Length: 429
Image (tube, rainbow, N blue to C red; front, side, top):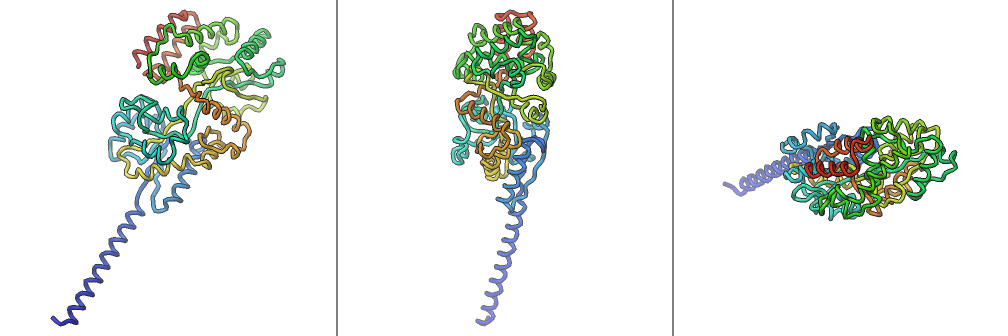
């Protein structure tokens, strides 16, 4: 072979190698462009969280233009009922919204279906952004009990129970909005004496147990709450001073006419409508009513406060973002969570009627929404989030509803009521 032909062969091989390399690079770019990132959540398009997460997706897409973002809306029950099966398959999304608690996220973490986010929480500062009480629903022990252990989810909004006041009715009665529990009861006595039931209450659904729990919290401390909710120590309803006080106080309010005997059969929706219609000056319920009241109450001035005198209130973080263990794009999932916690997304959530956990209040424009967030921030800063009374045990929501009804209609004494709750709590736990 001549040197010329040998050189030609070398050139030919080099060209072939270059073509192969170019083809390989092209395929790599094509594969990168086809990388899919799948998100599931169950918020409505017009709700505060749905609006905020939609903007977070736009920002994510701008940050990752080569990624194909695939978003699917799922129903709450749809995810709850199929999560275990889906997350055990190759159909798992890369990130999804999921409900917090022992029976949901805790169970999946225990089964090894969720990614441990502990290192990311530290590296990205999520453990600094979220207060210890908000972290409770993000962290789960090896047994799947919330409140300690590793991070398996990240929350980015909050909720809590408060007192709603009809300011016009208070002014007409020449009363100031209460700042102490003594003032609160004195106002109730004034309204009752004038023939107005001061507190509208639903005993057929969740509101009555939130009032019962709020009263107990006035005599409780964090260690009792953690024993009750998180199994961190011994807890019993029977003979418990805080819950004994709460049960006795509800009976006292019923006797004095501060709550109506009809409350036992009233539904939560009927309670809210009655308060909107000015039937009673006080309603004790959650922040989930707030946006609706801002839209619907036009005939009177109203305001809110935490339960007078309490340092703790029923409440929690919102639902959590979880990253399935089978996620193919965990790095992208972490980026998305990070975006949802950024101050601009959090401000959008707040201005849309939600409760952000990392927003600049100066960016919240509606004064009513600002009031909602400021009150939550005060509660959060003082480690006052006490979760919900039905959380600790399976089936406990229905037990609380029926047993509080039994208490209010006289079927149970306080001692019988607490003994019954104790039995159900321990069985459900």
